[in-house]
Image (cartoon, rainbow, N blue to C red; front, side):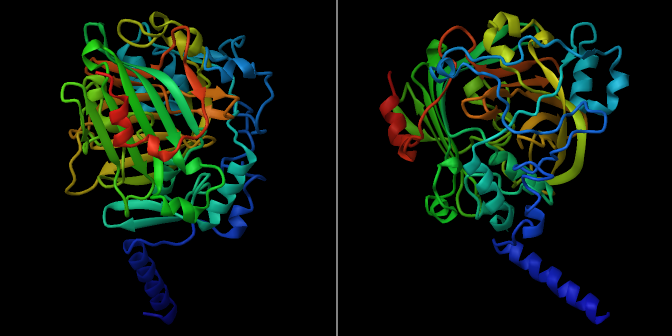
Length: 464
């Protein structure tokens, strides 16, 4: 063995030991990070458009003359692209022309419903953006954030108020970028959850008031202060209003961005028992009791309740894919205009061509999960999951998830944490979404104290 080879081997072994022990090295060099805001967007996407112009250059926050007073009131949201018409429509008949732009799951949906399913494709708008303080924090994170590993558990250190790995080197970093994606600070919304039977019946699994807070975006907090507070991630409190047998129930989830030091914490308030109990299985392939078991917990809103312990994440690369985007039209529709008997109304969903990171998750040896393989399509601009396909242990494509985002100028940026549609290809499907009927929909609110998202606060909300 040569001296140079021996030295490289020692360095490699040392880095491996560091990773295993729960520490790591900075994601990129200062020279690489200098590309942010130049040839790359402040979040790390390619600023330039594609060769044929079907994906435009990113130019920051657009000025679309949004009705800000209406939006801040929490009333019906606004559709900035209501007057646009589809450029073309993808169907089962012509999908071979667009095969390289379609995920496996979307092709399966077109084949399953050849006469009624279609993708109306509109002009691409790259309108995701954020306040300057988020951009500055992302640039700082790029050279200071660390991916830490301890056995099967992973986490992020040295990152706050921005994406940790805007220039990712591996699949785990892309996964954590999704967990840290900019989705504003704190929101209140009304949510409905439905499951649809093979016979075409729509069953209300739940209607709830939901409070969401992205604690990693508490403005002004330092990375050390964030660590001292316990690496709090997305926090959610849900207070059920319907159906009647669930009215008064509640759930609190306090997620973490560093599983090597902390675990996800969750509690449930049960009306019949008039007490709060721990809900330790709020994650993975546990059936989602909030939606009558119609989906798994780790299929919700881009799979944010999916940790790293059971799957290996491989970064396949980047490609151009048709994904749901700018779906503000949904805010103006009634539910009967969104949901048909066997699938969603294709005319209700807007599709655009975007560059995405393709991320493949496969089950680790010795681990158990009902979905043995998943493929995520993560939008390069938002770092949020747009599509997710799942295979069963026999290798059969089984589950197809669509994650719908909205442009919120009052955030500003694309919100991707409130609406998804899951298809189980043996016949059933489900949806969770913001309440689209007239009235309260989605409202940005000031950051709450993290004490609001606790079992004591949940007990105080119990109403029956």
